[in-house]
Image 1 (cartoon, protein in one colour):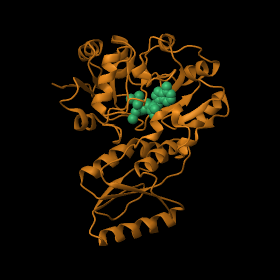
Image 2 (tube, rainbow, N blue to C red):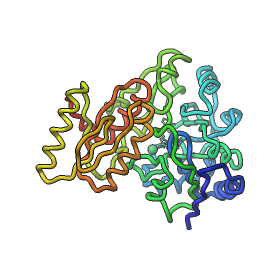
Image 3 (spheres, rainbow, N blue to C red):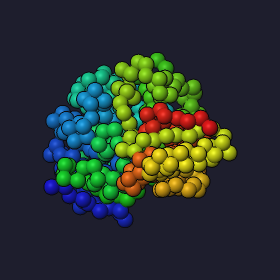
Image 4 (cartoon, rainbow, N blue to C red):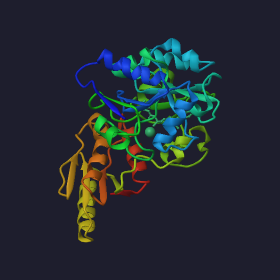
Length: 339
Ligand code: TXA
Ligand code: MG
């Protein structure tokens, strides 16, 4: 009951037509974006959107992002669009930036989790843009079972949803690998709700200082503004432990942890930017961009290898490092070891 359409080499117009028709019929279509794969439905069709929540097992109060393909569609779903939003859209759309704005009334409550705001982004991916243009604004969370690492390959979506949604478009590996940056522009001060594929430094160059919501750092206060913050996230079955600190210390600490857990008879996986000896090892690459691209794939791969513990090397928080560390600490349930 799930059709998988291969578009790894090119955007296939016939495939887009089939997928767009499914969206317009209220069905679920998973598709690639430049960040991660999304699980899409017609954003203005409450019944279709309800099916996304059901398929993912997502709590009803965690709102979805509406994906558009043309700037003119923004005013179909949002109102009172501030100057900052125009500036950011001009500079970064299509791209990995989601803006939270006051919502229009036609947007169903299910899509916004009952909030009076709506999250909107224009993805920079030819398949996503073609699909939206051929159908309608598309509500799409990341295409993973709620709480699991986000999907960066069609294979990940197949693992989670094959047989449970109507269509999966395989566009190969996603380029950025972490989800979009979410910024709230609906209140007086622009506030970062989720670090992501667009570095905060880039945003600040355009609109100046941005407040960072305390929940971004793991403090669970005032979660009402972005309910997604309070839920378990990115967790593989294995326990994740993040090791942070100075390079030399980190190496020693990781080796010590690997030894210790192996002596207890556990299977230990390591994901890092340098080589390590362990039962399973995933090399993340060295730049922040490479680590971001590989992060979720590493978590899913190590899980499939059946490790009990995943030890992840922390990286610096510059650029995409902010998003990487935010995801890693969450995946670890904030089990962070300072080396
Ligand atoms: O890169 C991405 O953003 C991917 C791709 C598919 O576009 N999508 C994605 O969606 O990551 P999701 O549902 O996994 O994450 C959406 C985040 C959640 O943290 C949610 O709470 C927040 O955006 N959000 C959505 N609407 C909101 C709103 N009105 N106010 C505050 N936060 C909102
Ligand atoms: Mg998600």
